[in-house]
Image (tube, rainbow over all chains, first blue to last red; front, top):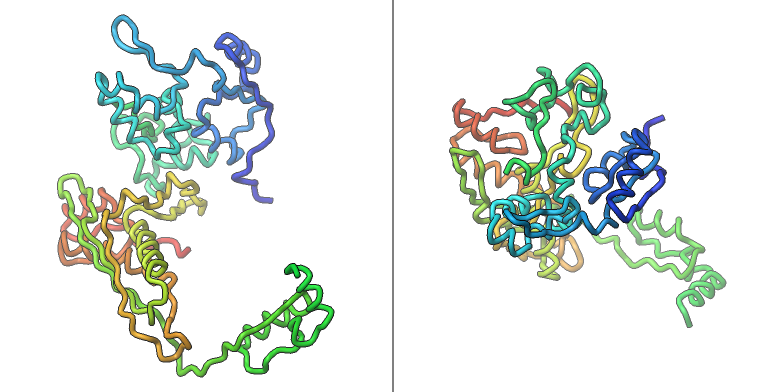
Length: 175
Length: 216
């Protein structure tokens, strides 16, 4: 029977209120846990049923992780700050224009409203073989499906590739 | 009387009211549809069997102007016009929406949409929208033009022939033709045409595209 795709599987949702709680949960769960920020990366894995965590730890309730704060020598951007907030923040627009511009290139306004800056720079590779769940090097296997003469690798890396030839998918990260 | 009450009453009366008896002069597809619905409520079928001499089709001619940056391969659609031959124009705004809307779909085919299969394993690879990017309002010119000939079709009662998908082919082909006009005489025959296709084609002197490998 074909694998069901595009249907969210069942899991337990944990919504901690503090960083300490979140860390404790994730340590407890180990391999069965999954960190959920904006969900823009996670939902693909979950709905395609490639990753099946038992517990999903939602960080959206942790206020300390959000917002842009000025520090002595610059600014500190919380990992859970949405991309829209980063793009529209007056200090970022004034002093870190490049970050505002590159964050604005990400996807679409709706995705930027939900996606976080932390999630965006740390998102997993978007190689279509890897994302379809094929057991490649990146997934712990012994082969790269894209790095073959017949592999569909038009959008993969040419330079600086070791075993995995997927490119960094983040628009804000290279900057 | 509510609609439900009217339906109940029609079923009671039967005959011509609930679709069991219809005019004999109906198109055979309409007859089949009415027969399937008979007895479910108030059913009526209007005359739709008009004399017809052969088949009629709608046509759309599309024109695009693009600007290609030959160093990066990126191109921009500067201007677009789609002209429709679809019979009488009954509702200009709706027709314009359909013609331009479907043109944008065709443009999307030309600039980036693709279905990709892995040829070795036969598995579908472009399963999500970010792998098969649909066109957005940012990809098309701000001011897309459209028009219609408004020549009544002699075969239909109101002169309108209808338009659905024809602008799609026009949208895609006009971009490919504009690219060929910009870059040389050989025609780009496969869509999408991306920046790297343009750069390799410029280097090679003729379109460099994979031959079609999978009939979908």
